Length: 145
Image 1 (cartoon, helix red, strand yellow):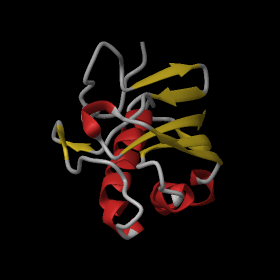
Image 2 (cartoon, rainbow, N blue to C red):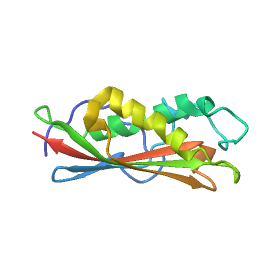
Image 3 (tube, rainbow, N blue to C red):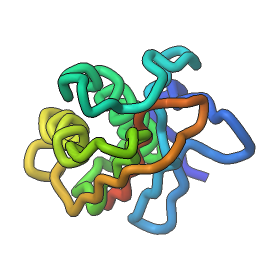
């Protein structure tokens, strides 16, 4: 068992771990915008609201996913590349700005990892999310020693 970095993983809301690792690949659980265990925003993403209304929530979900991924690393390792980013959006039926919502997560990862923070991406509208969260973020990342 390797020594992990830190213990500030997001708290699972069920029977799962924040991130799983197989070799040099890390898969995070879907992360909602929880801070200190509480959702910072709830409700559907609405067409009539400016997309910026959801920026903080998306960034918090991305913070949680990146934290979970980083906490699987040993002291000698770092994240080499975000391979995939999936942003699930609790969108009302008429919402069509999925890419704009996902851009907030991509921007956060780029700010923290540079070009390594940008991988392939999917922005998916869904009928609901746990706790009525507006978004959920999941990443797959590669590790380098």
